[in-house]
Length: 461
Image (cartoon, rainbow, N blue to C red; front, side, top):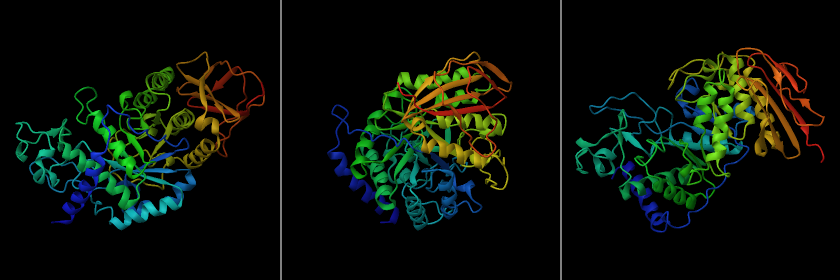
């Protein structure tokens, strides 16, 4: 019996007990633990993050990330990708899983991953692994050892030759979650990473694709999976790549604010669309649900290019770190990395970028971390006279109020805003430049892509 099969068998055996006592959806499911409100998530694609593109290269930068203010790292898939195509195209995607139980040898050894997790924990940083439960590479051992785990075009579960590809992705094979043994296998695999590597949680790829009744992974599996892994680690963090109300807290306590992400990309011409996208989240989801706010990720071009330069990226970042969602930083954003389109593979050059970005991000994240109104307070939109250009809102809670004004457009914005009554407002300077000097008034003037942040103690009633 090879080492892979021993691990798989042990993990599957471990999961059998859990599944025998797990409730079905007809009974009460265990509650999803709330996502930490102080989270600042940082996505790392190890291949581009350091000169050698490995896990020790991530460990070497933990002190810098800690100083930046990061407290949660999401590692893109660290498992081996397809190493042969077996007649199928292979584009080298990290989301084409060759072995669910191994560390990609190009990233290092299992001990390198353990060292990274240990070093992160010593710095108060949690580690999330990116898990691809929807599909595998065509050279994954499951193809031949367990063809019944896959969807087949001819209905013959024993025929590896008729396994279907996932969606339109010709480099991956579609798993079949109607098979109860596949479900047990996947739960066992997740518990393996928690117990053997002390992982804090997972980001799950492609959770609800396609959305609706024809989902490849049904909702009941996700709930069962959440119940099972919480038996191993009650406070496990579960982030789903989805934006579906019926999966909110079942089991995901954090999902993707996709509408907000898309609106931010158009914010230069439609700031009101950003407000509408945020409001959709509040209207459609349980009040306890948390969403992830982002302006850059693996599946998009770099934010400095989308937002028209560093100033636009900073304006978007101010919104991402002051609305009610959990902010995400994609590796390189903190220096204004402009290299790479969708699914980039070029190494980040940490010696270039915008010189103002590092101090800007350190100051913005520090402000987010120390201000309870930003992390946990209510958001109230303020009416202004140029809503297509400017967002104006107040965050309140924890004994303070924060007033934010952001001009997303490429033109100067002049107008009026209905600010809360009272005095005591002071401008928040995010770094040594301050990015302008402003005074609280019912009249505002903001340069293109400029923002203003003010804070005061909550006035006594």
